[in-house]
Image (cartoon, rainbow, N blue to C red; front, side, top):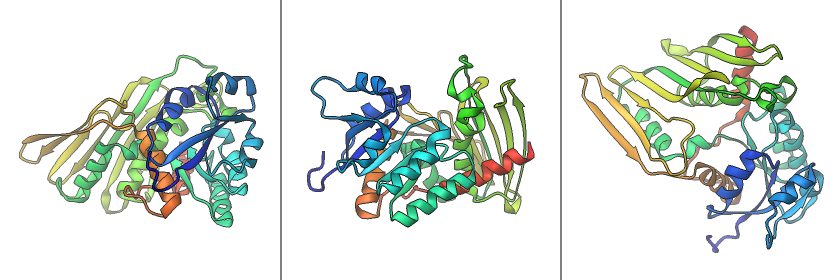
Length: 323
């Protein structure tokens, strides 16, 4: 822990498997953040995570937001609760890092942004993949013109969800593949190509009313395009390829990278020559939390990737209008 600047004091709202397996352990690896509280409206579940000797404050959501010992809140609740509790946290003068998708639609996201502006708090959508060294290296490579003018993105993020009672399969909790994993693909395409001019999509719906698969084409100015495949009823895939006028780059594990796994960027030149760029492993959740904490403390972060989640939701809304 860096003691020159006091760490930002964090609370997590939510105690699901993602919190237990990823977020709580990642806080122990941060340099600029300290987890001080856990919020759950299912108090018995939160108590189970409060280990003997722990100094964590464990309480319901409202009590956590009222605490003077909390500076920032990580919203790790089901999708349909993101906007409600993010706005409540902002109104309580807490900074907010909200799990993806930031909201169910752009209207909700706009309300969240306005609350952040009104209360002069930081708000960001939690896309941890941006912080892996392979993503940092990939963006520099693309911006540096190594493969010429960028023309096409192809990306896949999909898996097969067995448990149909899971919140990701239920419409009332904001389920479906587009919101769960497609948002990563849209975020990447937008940050590389900007806002699309047109979109086309086809999807397959479950009997319960969520999209289990979606295939999306985004068209950008200059004839550029992104072809995206996402879903919760497909063979697992987690990759992206960017094609340019002088070559292509392929990332075989693009969005979900285990903490102990090195990054790999495969480069193919126009003449067929191949190169491999390998990056070091990283806990992307810890890096994201640290970067957000630095952003709050100083207004700056070396990553410069805290984008406006409203734009992502506008694109997702557009996709849902045309499928």
